[in-house]
Image (cartoon, rainbow, N blue to C red; front, side, top):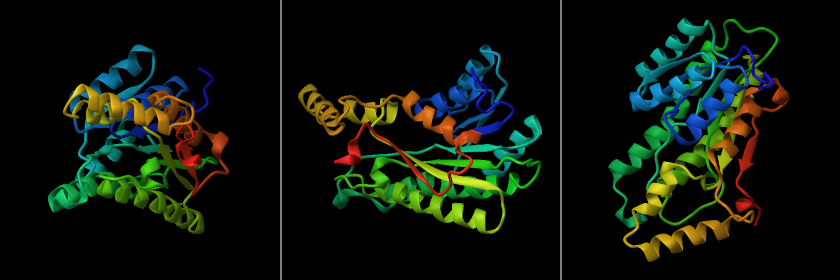
Length: 263
């Protein structure tokens, strides 16, 4: 531990696994106090327990990011426990690969509700909370988007639409915060394909071993570095954006994708 975010308080959504858990653990290792939230309360509790096992401070909450009241309670619980909020990692998200012609309006709305509405609600509530208790440092909102918010791909229309919207929401919010002197930086992170349940479950759902092997091979080939990302790769970027090392960074998009979008 080098204390890169020592004394900061971070709320991490979707913290029950994958990028969210890795980010919560990485921030805790660098000195942050953690509110780990997830729609699955047991998984959020497991993340908090891991932080505590290593001497960190953490609480856990069940949290449906599509609900305004749940966001208000998550932010209020964080400030009750730790006195302030410095960092929000808007990580919770859902995905699904469905043909455009087979995509139901219900599924479209579900993905946008979690991936975009949830980010907006968290951003709004965090910026409000970050107006109090500020010292000379800036608050940091880190919105987890995707490479599929930068480039398209067949079968992921709703996911790409939501993640592309998160990219520009982040830029607009960053400019508005700066223009109004709200002392909050807002940035987006764009992971490539990462070894998380979201990606691995989509591969596992393919009908046979040959299809699964072909999909995995195609994903590896799409990343010039020759591997899928690890949650810790993204967590390292989150720690940077949460820390004062990035104090001159706002409205930016941090692409961590093994070269996927460089082609």
